[in-house]
Image 1 (cartoon, rainbow, N blue to C red):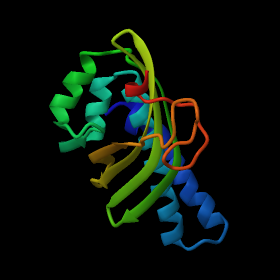
Image 2: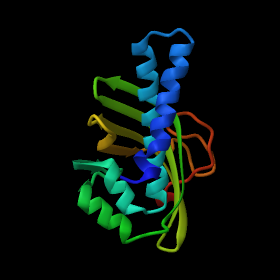
Image 3: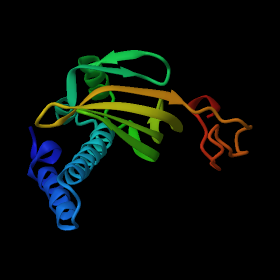
Length: 179
C-alpha cells in the first residue's frame, strides 16, 4: 500500500483523534469511534481525488476484490472493468465536490451518502452533473476497502437556467442531456 492512501499519515491522524478524545475525558469507545470516523473520511476523500486524477493503481488498493459500481445510467462495473475504463479516459474529470455528506457505521461496515457534483469534459464538451451517491466501505482490520458504490442522477425540476435541482437547492448546473 502506498503512503498517500493508507500510509502513516492517515494512521497518525486517526491515532491523534483517539488521543485527543481521551485527553478530553471521553471514554475509549468514543475515542476509537472518532478515530475510525476520521480515518474513513481521509480514505473517502482520497477515493475522489484518485478518481479525478485517474490513478488506477492507487484506486485499486482502496477497492475490495469483489467491488461493484452501479453507475448513474444503471450500468454495472466490477473492479477491473471500472479501473480499465478509467485508465482509457484519463483527464476526463475536472472536479468532484461532495456535499450533504452523511456517514453511518455498522460494526466494520460504513455507509457514506452524499450529493456529488462532478464536472468533466466528454466528447470535447464540458458538462456538469449532480448525483446522489452511496458508498459502502468495509474495515478489513488494517484498512478501509470500498465494497460498493451507487450513483443516481438528480434531475432538474425546472427548465435549464431556472436553477432549482430536485433537492430544492439553487443551482446553475445543467446535466449532460441539457448541454
